[in-house]
Length: 627
Image 1 (cartoon, helix red, strand yellow):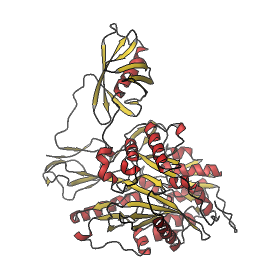
Image 2 (cartoon, one colour):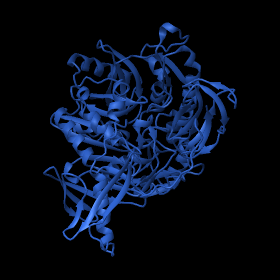
Image 3 (cartoon, rainbow, N blue to C red):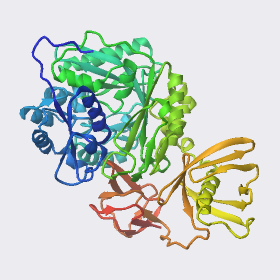
Image 4 (tube, rainbow, N blue to C red):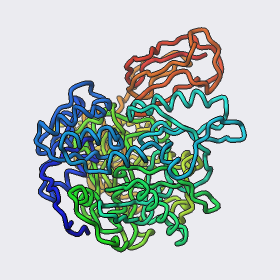
């Protein structure tokens, strides 16, 4: 823990968090524990968001209701002064690695809870950071350099990052990366470096004060990634030899000292199959995965950030690490459909109370999930004496959690945690490239539709829904989230409800709970209803009419918008009548801070092009037709 500084120290009494959602709520939690007043900023879309509701004060940022609003450093500084804050915490993403913003905060007489602007300038640009570490990006890329990785010079979270395996695709991927990076960070600079196949993403958390002490806080493995954005993280990194850990610690401390770093930061590496460590970057901010380090070392990194910003000194040596921690990021997305982001209302998000799971989230029950921002709903974090116990604990808690709303990656997380390659610590950054189809196979509970029907029948029976002929079979139809339809039959009898399913006996049925005995095993099904959907335990069902009505069909070859978003680009020279090849990019949609490529589904002719750059589209909007 920090020691008292021998000199005078600033005393922070009010903190504005220049961010939104989960990280803002997380910083506010520590501030409340320290007795510090909290100030939120919000866009129009976030006016009623959880972070704006839980703060002691909230300031609207004028402008559009999009991510761009949170990139207006001048407005955020003005908000801090208007609300009487004396310090600014940048969170992560947005302006967290923007030296100009840090300097503006300091120039306004506010305390900056982060590294110095000079340190940010030295490390926040990945190109300059590599130069500082004696590395150089690729310039003239040839076939022998492939595969290569295109990366944004600023920011993180996988934005502006592309793997290029064919030289002909390099220019288009550079253009896409620049556009995505500019949208997310306000900086379109990108660079190219060699892509290490089959590597493990290992990072070191550093914490430094203004008195010359730098801590290296263990290692984290962040190899399970989609779109170069981390999904599951853990500490310590399993299977890393002590000699490699010592090397990574030494490099991380060296990087921090090279720029007189202060506060929390992360030095990231890619460890190749041969055990060699390749420096990736230094993130001059708090990381999404910081809770696993907190759990293992028994510290609060946000509290340490604040204390260091006040001028206090760290102890000479960091605390001892204990046990193992794992974090899983819960996203509103459909992994089976190219990780398509999902929007809608998050009706319920709850982990079992007895599980003692840390849940960091920026949402509460009933909150809408907007299209403008990253689709992460929450982070579930566990700590246990061993890695095997932590895996078991987190997988079980996620499996038993109630998550009602848009499609999420919850099932993917549970299956990933239980996959042999993960449990034996043989994973690398290509995990999902190899295993995604098997991890996303639909597996709805086969008895969920029957439980829904019996629950519904009980509710109607209370209001005179009994038939004159008790034995008359009743039929219900439901669709699961993957579109599969199920038909179930039950009867009202003098003894109660009975199921028309072999080996199934109805033990109990009411509006919220159905108990079935299936092949001699008694099972409970909790049923929750919303306007257009029923949840039976973890299975989402949509009631269907008994006799389906005819629906309008789109012409064969129609390309429909898979998500709400904005058409940011149409392929150069593309027009109706043009020949196209299967897989050829036709246009790009931006949604939830990421670009999504819409490609030709088959080789043929583009007979219609309805998409226009700048157009706002909803799910199902007709974009083009290829036949």
